[in-house]
Length: 76
Image (cartoon, rainbow, N blue to C red; front, side, top):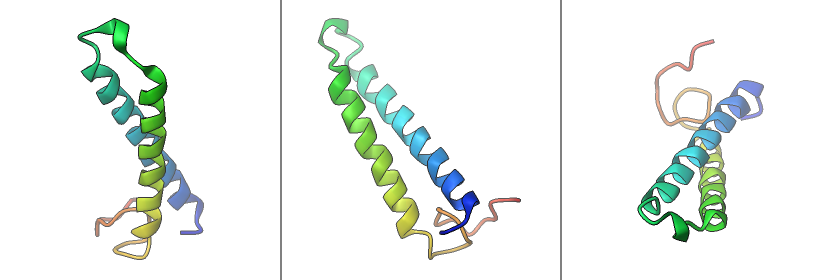
């Protein structure tokens, strides 16, 4: 958990989670462009990204070293 590779992988996952959540939330409002509340969508995306980092921390003691529960190697 204290390695730079752990934090790089965690950051990558959090950024992906943020982007996916934002696209999903904005996409569901895309039918009515005038009602998109971008502030709420960004706030929900930030919460999802924080949860992603917390999940990485919680799973750091399982499987191979890194922020994933996977047993597969992350590659060096």
